[in-house]
Length: 75
Image 1 (tube, rainbow, N blue to C red):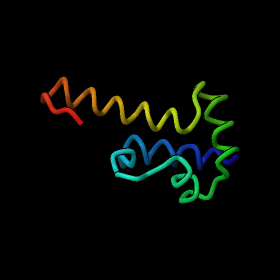
Image 2: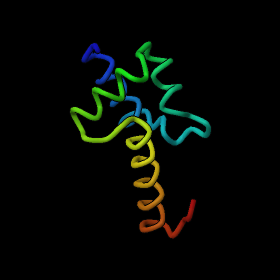
Image 3: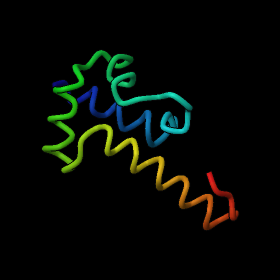
């Protein structure tokens, strides 16, 4: 897997907040960036200890928690 695609995946989550868009899936993100889902999953697990779906859900949970704590908003 190209390291640039991993970096793009990170930018889409960190800067573009793609995880906040309803209906966005790990498979969809992989398709957009032109990376095989299994290869990306394997790379993420080796680097971060978590698969792609797990990372996407962790970002979503983190956002929900932050909004609840900061503004009292429950999503």
